[in-house]
Length: 280
Ligand SMILES: NC(=O)c1ccc[n+]([C@@H]2O[C@H](COP(=O)([O-])OP(=O)(O)OC[C@H]3O[C@@H](n4cnc5c(N)ncnc54)[C@H](O)[C@@H]3O)[C@@H](O)[C@H]2O)c1
Image 1 (cartoon, rainbow, N blue to C red):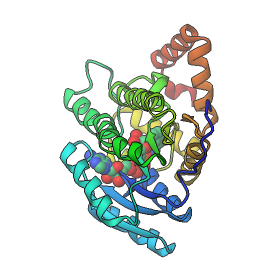
Image 2 (image 1 turned 90 degrees about the vertical axis):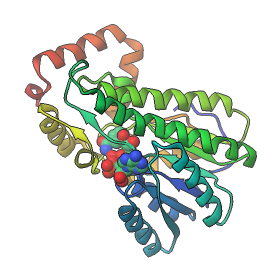
Image 3 (image 1 turned 90 degrees about the horizontal axis):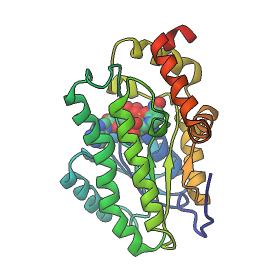
Image 4 (image 1 turned 30 degrees about the horizontal axis):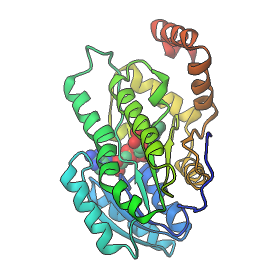
């Protein structure tokens, strides 16, 4: 969507860094980058799962290294960049700011401030740190790309998900800003905005109450495989697309927000008031 053509294909033969690579979408990114001939630094706050991803990449015949990094800490992201320069066969050409956690189930005013801070630290500051540390390096390289893993929550205003929505709106705004600042630099930037993807996001997050049951039901019915999402995202980056929304419902929400914003807000408000669960 809304792309500009760029001559390079950043997903091919990349020297890549993937955050949150120990599970779900991050793991699928690491494997697909390896299938496309790249080598990957697989970082995660959980070193053991990052090491499992490395083993899977090696089974494919690819090259990968594990690194423990909490993306909410700038010094750890800087250390990750140093490690990437040390181990990868060339300068970093592809950065996937993917690490994130899910939070939901309570309205604004009841959701604990501790949950806001935890989510913002990982989902928003993590992406800010990744862009801050790697953008100058990519600019200097003059090619490559960044994918920031945002969400349909960036623009859907889904109720009981205030903290998560704020982090993903911020991640998308940063992606859009970078796309403007990097225009003509040879570096592409893509914001990935999926709806539901079958990963460990609920087990690793803080989704509580009715939202937790609803999440399971919706995930069972509509969840997409991380492999499909990642393929779409890397292809979009190669085309120079700013946004990638792998699912139909994400694209519909995007359009409704722009074409009929008041009706959209009213409709979502009614669904929230009378209970989403009754719709299913
Ligand atoms: N699963 C979905 O339905 C969905 C939808 C839209 C967007 N997303 C986004 O996709 C991204 C990946 O999530 P996922 O669904 O694969 O979940 P997941 O829980 O399967 O994987 C997330 C990974 O991030 C790691 N992580 C957590 N905190 C970290 C930190 N502070 N530093 C580094 N790593 C950390 C976890 O250890 C885990 O390996 C997230 O940004 C999430 O918000 C997911």
